[in-house]
Image (tube, rainbow, N blue to C red; front, top):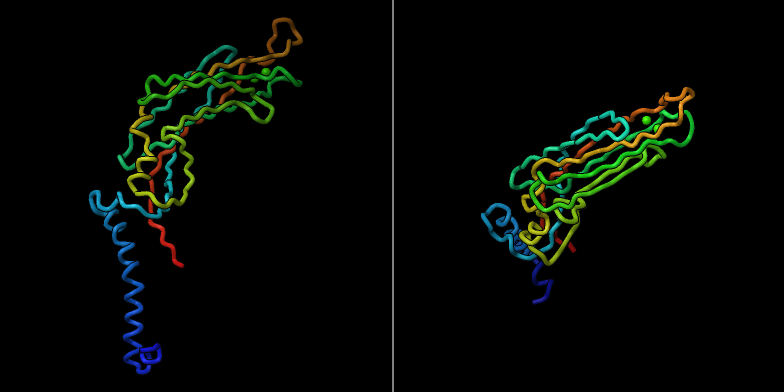
Length: 227
Ligand SMILES: [Ca+2]
Ligand SMILES: [Ca+2]
């Protein structure tokens, strides 16, 4: 039986088309089914291997405050990070401190600040950080960042030969990062001598403080090669 025998009547053509459609649909059906069951069923097929697209749906919660500090004065900035749904993890927590000293009449005498964290009120084992920065010259102030989920970037990617449960265990905050994040900010005010002895030209500086916590939900979808 050659191809001509298969297509010599309209009825045979219909049968042939139906057969080819079934041959194409059958493997696709069984390729999709495990992932559909895995998405909906408890446990399901989430341990089966495949090709996946991994995306991070982010939600950022911020706190901003501005403080005015004199020379040597310290402000404790506190950021309370709350627990979310179990499907939501914390990517990272950061603090950005900026300042712009324009109180001095000429160059030099730029103010600066130091920051020191106190993470004793945060769940998990995070290292304290210190940072400092000048209040001018374009790159003003300083920032600190802690990854609560190790190596978090928020960049989506595709991966093959792995399972949903392996991807989920890679992107996990371990339930840590909850509590009071504290950074003490200490100002170092630099002032040129005033025209009158004892007169102070620059006595303080404003500091803009922004905290961010990036929460995320994993979105894992199957990838099919349509050749
Ligand atoms: Ca100054
Ligand atoms: Ca100043």
